[in-house]
Amino acid sequence: MALRNVVKVGDPILNKKSRVVEKFDSRLGDLIDDMKETMYANNGVGLAAVQVGMLKRVVVIDVGDGVMELVNPEITSSEGEQRESEGCLSLPGQYGITCRPRKVTVKAQDRNGKWHVYTGEDLKARAFCHELDHLDGVLFTSKIVEDTDKE
Image (cartoon, rainbow, N blue to C red; front, top):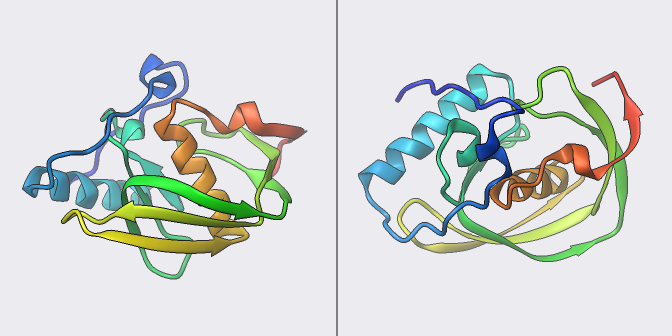
């Protein structure tokens, strides 16, 4: 495993749409392992591959209940609403109140290509939405409904 540099706002790659993963091999496993290490080293709860310079539909999330590796994730349902403070490793020091669903269900593959379904509420639902937005070149700042300078 290796730490990767987190791409910061201003880099045009953050606004690009990531490509579907079709090859499930050791290079994908290495990317996922590196992403986990990078996320933890930066005290994050989620990281998308684009944030380490790779335009692949891959995210890792850990909101405190174990890491989830999501390859080619798609939101299949959402419900409710929550307004909470959000930040991003690619936008250090920037925070804002966003409006996100309270509960989200995601369908995704694992590093071996097997499909799984995950449901998250509150912080996990926000993390799903935030990281999947990255895969489409969308930053959380476009979802801010109220500015804040606090975490």
